[in-house]
Amino acid sequence: MGWDEGRARTALRAIFDAAVAAADPRVSLAAHLPDKPRGRCVVVGMGKAAALMAASLETVWPDVALEGTVVTRYGHAVPTRRIEVIEAAHPVPDAASERGARRLMERVRGLGAEDLVLALISGGGSALAALPAPGLTLADKQAVNKALLESGATIGEMNTVRKHLSAIKGGRLAAAARPARVVTLAISDVPGDDSAVIASGPTVPDPTSFADARAIIARYGIVPPLAVAAHLAAAAEETPKPGTLAADFRLIATPMTALKRAAETAQGFGLTPLILGDALEGEACHAGTLMAGIARSVRMHGVPLAPPAVLLSGGETTVTITGGRAGRGGRNTEFLLGLSVALEGAPGIWAAAGDTDGIDGTEDAAGAIVTPDTLARARALGLAPRTVLANHDSYSLFAALGDLIRTGPTLTNVNDIRAVLIA
Image 1 (cartoon, rainbow, N blue to C red):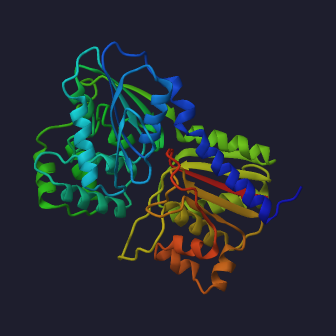
Image 2: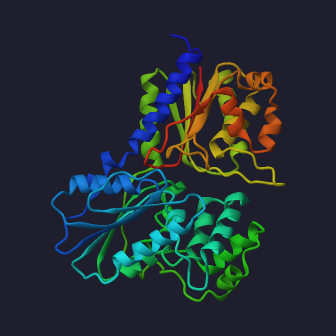
């Protein structure tokens, strides 16, 4: 059976949906739970999957007297019976983010050695639970967060800075819970599944320092508020370091989990999958150019594998906003437009990319689909793809073409899934 437009679109959407389904906490959470506690069981959580994780926990532990609070993104709450859910803003924190973070800290104070703190952590937690360090305000954190998002900094770099402006991140939540036992159940959305980076590591030791945070601010030419500059310079109280804080950290879903499920689904369509990695970083449009080159090699030379095939990758690329030219779009639509521009209508190549949380950047779409005639259709509408790309307005182009992938909030997050199909 040959490949046409309809079959390619069907396969790409099925591959993406399978990747998302593989990260559903309702499937994986129960297998990673610790023994039930003798004392109290306090649940705290932050992230886009936190509410669904909390609801899943209530289902699998109906006989445990659960109590606690989780903070998730607006529109990501689900019904719970015993665990409080607070909704807050992402990617820039708001007053609800600060209120939620304070509530989490209140929940873990005054516990005993026989009590258990279950921390439900997932991507997005850094913004959703934002408690300024002493001497700083929410406005200070908002300003730095916005500058970091536009700078092109990696998620690891951004979270290094966030940890050193926070009273809850970088292990401080776990430190406040002493002497209770803290067990973290996490869904990873970061390259390398680094426990100290997921949601800025509120329950694990922090290997980074104030000096690292200052270096990142300088590297990207960020001019922070005066209070932030003074706080970083003073380096008054470091985050808990390795060896000073016990950490029982359990991953229940990862980007590789999703990619492996995507590969299995691709095989069901008669495609040979090649997973290129789960931790790709760098400028989104440059990653698109690189992936276009590999796809051309598959199509023309059968290298690194023969078609029909699909190239799969995960991770988190970045978009650096320059010259104030910021249209609408996230890193996935920017990746796809960069890919399409580089392919310039090459036949037999389709692609899809999306954020597994269902939200690419701040938009209402997870990502989009690229076809061999994407550029031709865009130009027929009077759009100049290269100009659109330079203005970071990729969402608008794919919206005009009707090629956005819309899932709504998926209530999980293992970061981006990219699939390039070569017939």
